[in-house]
Structure formats: structure tokens, C-alpha cells
Image (cartoon, rainbow over all chains, first blue to last red; front, side, top):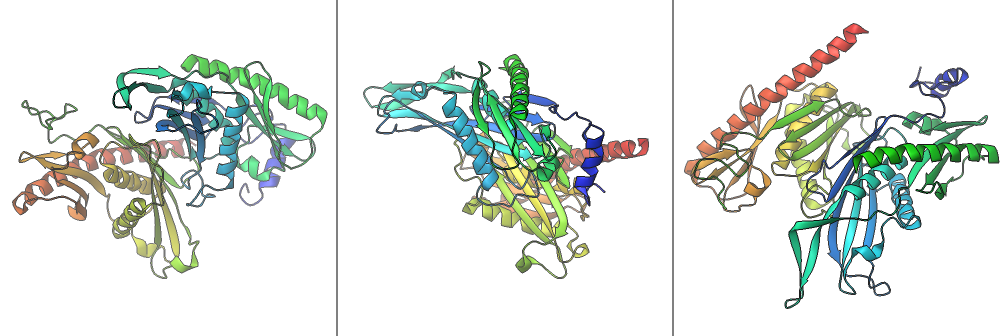
Length: 266
Length: 243
């Protein structure tokens, strides 16, 4: 019944005010975070929201700063949704959903000023760090955005980069094997995704099934001072004032819970 | 830097005929028909199976056998230097082709004509023996998916250092170019060799020794894999009986 008529299957549960996985409409799934599992990367984090699993790995390289910002480094987020995580994805270059996710993370990094790009500069005009934030989805059961944001934060906060000194005579960088430094992460933005159904129904933290049945989604990112740093609502059915306020309140609470979780870890 | 110290121990403290710590788990992904996670020392691989299902590409449908679609991908953060192209580059396609041939010989392909099985292996951390981890992970995932096979496919690497054979070679040992590296995959019960690959020079006299060492390594790995599959089936049966 569930595969043949998903909408009716869901309607039966919604009539009883509950979802098939026994959550209430506004409840988020159990979230676990694990850092430091990939030792070849400078920093790594594995985040599970329910069944959705995102692995984030941070690698760095040297680069020459841009001409118009000679003391800035680079941060490059990249999300990969391979066929491994869901039969819906085909192998090949990143699809739409992956690109949208990558761009969203880039927007968050910029709007929260997550990392001061000046911290990444080694020698003005000559040498700077490039930080590659690579997110790999291992299991896609809805709400990849939220998991990506948490994974990115956890990995950035726990990452260690080697100290670099310039050998003056040869003008070459010497990478220290013993000394390392951590990044100064300025903010802690946490996003919460809601999906919209008809008849004023809003569900928090959708599973893949719920995403397929929905008629729109809304993602709200809340930063450290409980302010909004990013709101995304692309098309779908309209929301009114009251619903939006309710979602913002829920997002603020969720952000506080996630921040507590992250501060225990790193 | 010596690969085998005077006391007979390797860089990571193993004896020459010892395989790395082997950890595996089946059924780790919720969305795939079969999945397995495997750790051979520090090399971590994750495999997922989708199928058998209707073949997507009409050109690839074979009227009497199943078409196996294999994708090998290394995460960008899996190696010491960041990999720019995790898949689609020549090496990955070459490896995917190789793996497809290997599994074609072990899966009972006649049972699913006109269908397709998708095998996707992701290397999360690469510390030597990547192909072996890939084959072992894919085998376990196929077991989890219930795809009928002739036998397990177990894979191991072997090398020759100062006329002593070592098995299950890790990354720092692999990088020593002067030593030959043999990658071997066998069907353990019949000891048939499915894959034998070596890309360096080796005197013909030593071939027998290094093959024997490789086969022994594969059989050690088979024991652990077999035990894990039986455990997994036992647990699944217990859950089914309880409900």
C-alpha cells in the first residue's frame, strides 16, 4: 500500500496527528555527530539525521590570492550526491540538487562570515590557503541540507592545519610537521528545513518520502545571536505570516539544541 | 626506511604474513538493496547494490545475462593529496571495467536476463590495498542484497621484500617502487584465481612464492568475511522470528 498509494498512506497517519515514523509534525529526527574519522583529511565529520548520512572532509592546498583581494584565502564548499546514497541519482557530474546544496553552503559561509578569509593568508599577494570542504552523502533519506550544514561546521571546528613558514632565502614555504593551528570559526549557523503540504500542513525535517509528496519547502538558517542568516523558500505553495513565524521559532529552538550538541564535541 | 625491521616486524608492527585489522558490517545503508562497510587497517570502503532491476539503457540490455554496472569512486579527501576528480577520470573507468569483469565471473548472471545490477563502491580513506577493499566490500554488499553467487570473492595484496613475502600491503609499503606488488582475488573454496594483477618487475622464480602468500592472505580474509555474513544472517533471522 505504501508504495502504490503513498499519498493515501500518509493521509491516514496525518488524520491521527502523527507521522509513519512516529514523530509529531514538528519533531526533528535523532541527530548524531562524529568527528575525526578520516585521518587523511585535515578535518572530518560524520552526521546522521535519522537515516540521512553526510560525511564531510576538509583538505587544504596552496594558492595565489586574487589580484583584487591580495590578503584573502579561498573557501570552496562542494556537495556530492553519488548513486550510492539513493537510486534516484545517476552517475556523472553533480546534478541540480547537489549544486543547489553547494551554493547554499557558500551563501551561509559568506553571510555569517564564518571564517575570516584574512586568516587564510600566509604571505600577502603570494601565498594563501584554499580550504576545500567536500561533503559526501552516504545515505539520502531527506533533508540533506541540514545535515550538510552541521557536518561542515563540525569538520571546520575540529580541523587542524599545519603551520607554514617561508624560507626567506629560497622563497619557498616550509610546512611544519609538528605545529598546527585550528581555524577561528566565527559563527554557528544551523539550518532547519520544513516541507509544505496542502491544507496548512507543515512538517519539520522531512524524510525522502515526505519530500516527494510535498508541494514546496522552506529552509531557515539561524546564527549565534538567534538572528536569521539565510531564508530559502523556492516556489511551492504560499505560506502566510503565522506559519512563517512558527517555523522561525522552531528553527531558533533547533539551532540552540544543535549548538549544545556541537559544543560538547568540538 | 626498512620495510621489515631486523626483528622481523613491519612499519606498523605486523609480522610479514599478518593481514591488517579487518572490520566489516553488512546492511549499513537504508536506501540500497544491499550494502556493506569495510575497514582493512586504515583503508575504508563503502559499497552499495541496487538491483537486479530493469535495465535503464536499452543499448546495454543483454538478452541472456544480467548487465553489471560498476562504479568505483574515491572521495576527494581519501588520499593525502586532494583528488580533483573522484570519478570519470581514466583510472576510475579502467578500474570500473576491471571490477565489472571480475564480478561477471562470480555472479550467476544467467538468472536475470535483460536486467541490471548497479554496484557502487566509495573509498572513504585510501591507505593501500584499495582494489582489494573495493572487491571485498562489493562481495559483502552482494551477499547482503541476496544476489546469487558462485562463491565469495576475496582479495588481498602481496609483495616481495628481500626475498620475504609480505601480505596486505599498506600505503607506505606500496610507495616503495622497487618492490613488486601483486593484487590477487580468488574464489576461496576452489582456490580459483579470478584477478591477478601486477604492474612491476618480478623474477619468474619468485612468482610461486608470492602467489602462495597471496592466496593464504585471501583465505584469511575469507574466514572473517564468512563469519560476519553468518552473524548477520543469524541476527536477521532472529529479528524475523521475533516479529
